[in-house]
Amino acid sequence: MPYGATGVEPISEEPLSPEATLAYARRLLDDGRPFAAHEALEVRWKSCPEEERELWQGLAQLCVGLTHQARGNAVGSARLVERAAGRLEAYQQTAGPSYGLDLEALIACARGRAHGA
Image (cartoon, rainbow, N blue to C red; front, side, top):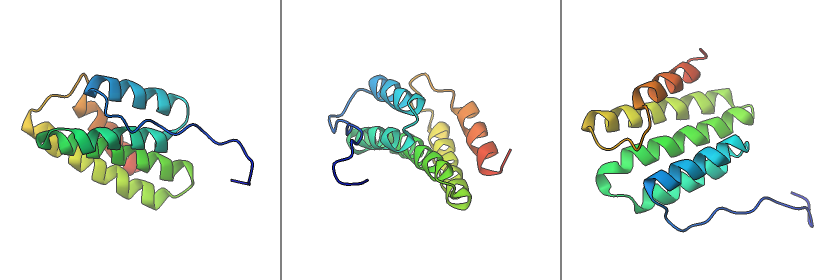
């Protein structure tokens, strides 16, 4: 970014509840800011209970995969999205809270995206 150019406002480093984190990440994605959504999810991942790490890391990786896709890095995007799907699938098998997410649909969508469907 050139000197003096207006940037985007950084996201808060304050941990939010799971539901608030998901709502915030969705707003950022709707605004076309997948990397910022990744950062919001990363804040949650660093503050969540150990047993929820796969969920939050998977969601964060999915957003980084979307970032790579937006930047034209199809190979990097596919790898990250597939890795994210694996984490989400591992978490789904634990039967931990999904906070309203349809993990099965999310995993299928991620895998479809990773394989060009």
